[in-house]
Length: 93
Image (cartoon, rainbow, N blue to C red; front, side, top):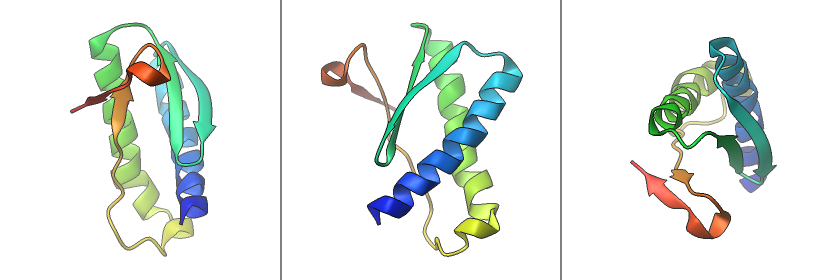
């Protein structure tokens, strides 16, 4: 399942990138490791929540409606964390 998860994340992040770029948000897409994606942005809570909302919208509306992922029968959810380093990550609600 982890292989399918990483495919979903890669597909979703391509869509997130397009939306972030269209809005002119200062976000860098840094890395993807398995089913996790990392973005780098200014230390702005408003920006972080705007990007979080975009990610959630793509996972809940775009991915499930694409025929390539028709085999996924469960809701797609994401944990969103923020921090200055991997060791400092805190979950965002």
